[in-house]
Figure 1: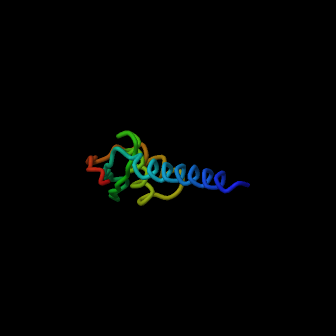
Figure 2 (figure 1 turned 90 degrees about the vertical axis):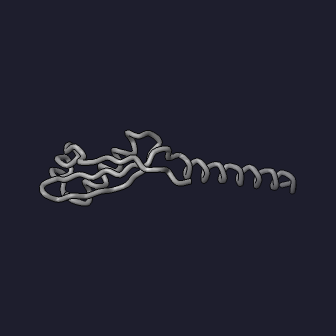
Figure 3 (figure 1 turned 135 degrees about the vertical axis):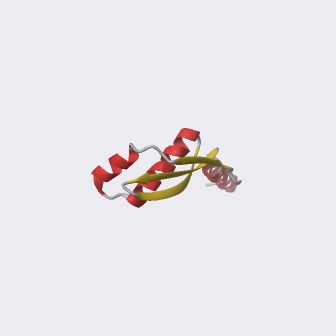
Length: 92
């Protein structure tokens, strides 16, 4: 394989990798903290997402995972409204 072709392929791979890292690190546009109480236990979690709904759902699910176990507890917790939702600044 000619040296120029190897260099071109290497540059193309480096550019693709750089784009992948950039897109992964900068895809979150929203950051929220969700607090909820389920069966007497309270948990707060922070999550990021491309949309406000995505970030809120992720934080809510993460908070539920801290205070429940099993399918029944998880489903019940996911249907519980958050006690607070705070939109935070995305730091990049």
